[in-house]
Amino acid sequence: MQKNKIFSCKQLEIGYDHKPLTTVDLELNAGDILSISGSNGSGKSTFIKTILNKVSAMNGDFQWQVDISEISYLPQISHEDHFFSYTIAEILKVYGVDELWEDDLSDEYLSKKWNEASGGEKQKALILTKLTTNVRVLILDEPLNHLDKQNKSIVLKVLAKISQKNEDLVMIIVSHQALGSELKINRKLQL
Image (cartoon, rainbow, N blue to C red):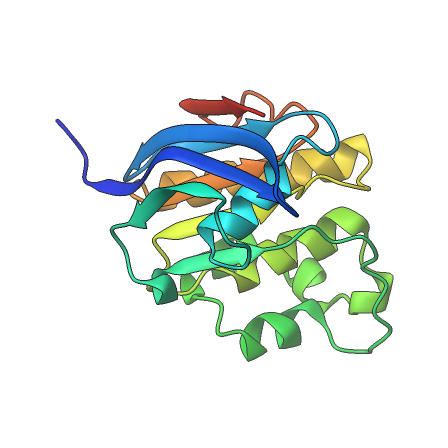
């Protein structure tokens, strides 16, 4: 059964300062999980910023079949050491994280102070804050950066669970690293 088209681009040329990096042709349907990989400076983050209208396309066009309010974006995080004393539960509550996730989160995890959480625990919370009831597209730029093996596993399991609970959610994940077998990636873009 054909799923609804969510995104398409044709001959989308991306770059900065009149210097094209690459041209992309792509179509995504509901439920697709796209992995974007490539070397530093190849245009991965530029592609994301372009399709979010944060950077102008140099040529070509793209079209979303969802409202911009249905797209959630977690940018690349270079330093997550914010020193505040909120618990993970308090942070998730502020962002209105759906009760759908309560069974997946232990009391120990929820009661942990942000300052005491591991990198993977923080990234898990940040990803969950991007999931509201109307999100149809989740874009993650380097969600595994700066995480050790154990914390990468935590984040990948969360992403796999998200895709299982919402089969029509489109995920676009930029990563230098392998995304593991837990996540059922069905689309790849090498830049």
